[in-house]
Image (cartoon, rainbow over all chains, first blue to last red; front, side):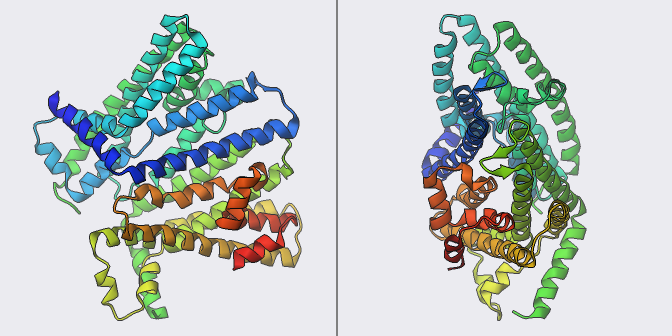
Length: 261
Length: 233
């Protein structure tokens, strides 16, 4: 366990050393956030709407801010790490170490996102206390959903990263994964604005669980039971990704030549 | 830098595309998907409004398409150069470019052509032509539109070039490399929806709004000549 804590600590320290990169990353997210806020502002202004499908302008803005912040925590940089290690041959050094490759990856991911996780927890507690201060069960259910989502999302990233065994260039994946998150996670617009038929099809996808559903849970749109159902769905997704990750790694390692290309 | 050398670069790029076929297909398919997702978002926005501060659904789609053409054009011609340049600066491999008996600048910017992006570019142009065919435009508007798209590609090159140069001073600035992309993303929406401060910044300081919104403004006959002149300068 201690070795994993060291990895978390090292990654966290690395983030703080490269402050410039860290702040530029935040700035880039701010650009995206303002873009979405302004487009919704224009929609509300253009038609003089008070409420759109249950969302007032204020609720909509809060939703967009929270969901955009989630997208920092649930981002896709980690997907490309394995691919880079395969290309450079550095994967061999990880394989040789007496360490679980998945555990090492998870520690790396947590360390990398440590600062955001702290901010996220602070924002999370502030929001939940404002909404359902008296219901401790609701708070615990929300927190549980966030924790399970972190694990599920990590398994999704790990599964996607195994594509690195087959593809030399992984960069085209980045914009498309981001685009999937933007659309299926409900970053551009809350997913329930879609027709009921479409919403029922895509509402339980992994991106929606970490983005749309979690944000709405924090805004107090659901009850405790509903959140627990979402927790179960998230666990199910995590298990599916874990299974496919195992299979893909097994096959990928057979393809891996052990040295850089 | 001669034509012959550029032909060799194109030939190498073609060979590379064909050798790494799956990667190339990957780039094309995902590029198209990204484009479709942008169009779908537009559809959702216009479910709730007919006009977005004067921009119709039709104008909005044209804007998405135009910005995609400019971005694909940049990716096709220059993105490989910028990616490798950043790495070469950090790794200290620039010397190999400098010692060659050719113009170093042209050598590295034209070193590779990203052919999968050329396929995406073609698709985007076809969609743009289909959208444009629904209305009629004057010859001058068409010339202005094409000219501004070409200028847009060149502007994106210059913007990215400036950002890549930061690598000479900052070792780990990968996120900064993505900044032009975020600014371009922001300007793929109608500029009228932004507050005046942002409009001022992105028209007069970094004229990225003129780059992306400009071609569509020409087709809409709703442009600011002074902003265009500033952009040329």
